Length: 124
Image 1 (cartoon, helix red, strand yellow):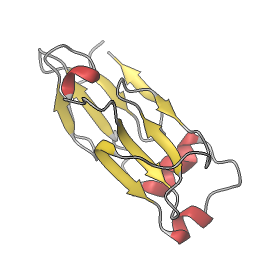
Image 2 (cartoon, rainbow, N blue to C red; image 1 turned 180 degrees about the horizontal axis):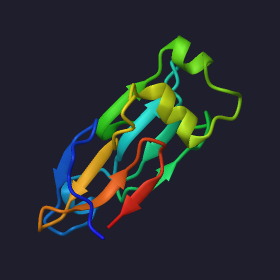
Image 3 (cartoon, rainbow, N blue to C red; image 1 turned 90 degrees about the vertical axis):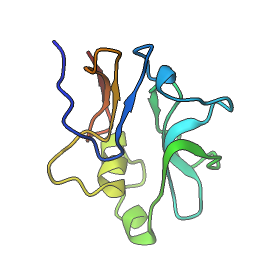
């Protein structure tokens, strides 16, 4: 089943190869998206192949290819001590319609990768 493009908060990107990595020139292997604490520590990242990780506050944010979010103190303080990916995404993005956060379109224009509002991913 294919998913029809409907827009995404951080955008839709075309991939001639139909892969997440194919949508970007990413010679430094940077994360595509990162969400950091007010102090700059990485809370969540979407890696160059679309894998979502939440390392906690153990590593410092380096840089992102598509988008970086640094939570405000209020957003950060709203999180529990060990937040889930969904809680981090909810704190980082105003998204009452539960729109996808990021979409990758394959060669035929159909969505082949979705980073969903709750931080999970889906592929077609």
